[in-house]
Image (cartoon, rainbow, N blue to C red; front, side, top):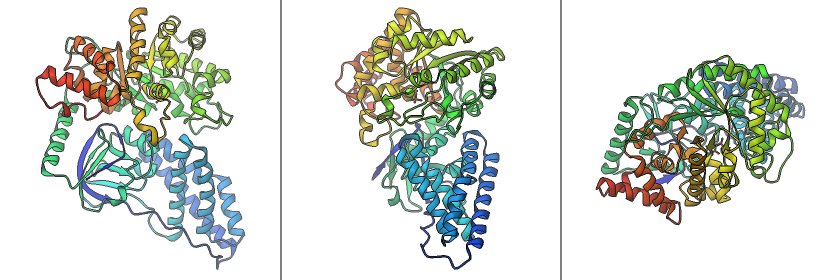
Length: 564
Ligand code: PEP
Ligand code: MG
């Protein structure tokens, strides 16, 4: 039997299920037998103890986890929440009930906002649980420690728990809740944990049951057959061999260089990216640095962050994207309007133009960081739809001292007129996540239309081909920095469509490097033609698998690109 969800990365793992305890139940709603002052004291103590505990975990965790835990500690210490709790206690509630109701109120407000903020709702639930566990004198709900390696199954793992997972024990993570941009997924990706989120039937998995977790195929296989286990073991061994292969620069079999770059959201991931063979950075998502900020960061605050990043890549290309604020990643200091359809609203370069001082400060900080370090900084704008926007951004970046400025191609319009766009800017980087979303008119956050969100679709591939051809015509580089670049077989097709570099989660680099080495440019171009000549995404994938199998003279086309 197989359960399905959304895989994070392409890893695979086998192990016995250990379920994480279900959360504390809702406290009964009866008037307190204690005085309001005593209840108020209990609540205040529990809130501050929880804030201190989260801050302490943040200090020891490091990485993206540190920021997440620090943000949670701030939420636990939030004075407005404390006042909400105090008011309820004065009204006669127990501390337990007051905490439950106050946090639930905030949680519902966040959940109703949708997108990125809705995924933060789990953070508030987690803090509420921790505060109530403190009140009850029981351990905070957390990760079990059975004393042997296991597959952790949970309703939704909190950021605090994901951050402190013991990677020697937890082989994989399966959660019932959570989307691909939830904190659990972000942290799992950064820590290279094999994970599948949003597995609706995860609650049917029983303790001790051995499962195969295949993040690339989005499946959890229950009660696997000996043949399935042997296949999974072989693939785990193959991945380990790949990971241990020499960290050579990316290239095709005929020597055509295809630089393999890292997608990062904080300088904390830089050392790991270098260890995994990243030749530089193809996408640094700066908005991840400031998601919790309630005012625009100063030039100096930003400069420090950018210097930290650039110092990790001396002599290497580092492409930093200016803030992609809006849609599922609103920043309070850039996006102040509620929009009925935010993915089509003031997002990316449109939002920055409306808040030009923020853009100017960011470009200034980037130019200063570049001057202070030896990396080859390039800066790009997200969500460009017109030649005029590309010209505006490139000119402003240069005016403020940025040497190389380019644009992301994430809208069908930018792809269709890529030759005109590239005439006014230095390079293009294709964001296939958004390009697929906008080409297929399928919200990337919505599970019900996830099947349409497939970069293998020939409509998306045609647009990528337009950009590749425009790059060749104008002599400008064309990268891909969406998730498509991490798909080992699609990566070859992208090169066949004229893409000159690939940027991805660092954990995907080894597999993509190995895949590229299997084919020459003429093969890649042939695969691209085969994919373009189909009616849909699965047909395109199938056509390329068949072309590869024909070339290798084997019939096992199914073993190719399970990670796709
Ligand atoms: C993309 O859209 O493909 C991309 C890389 O940007 P993001 O995922 O941050 O929107
Ligand atoms: Mg994008």
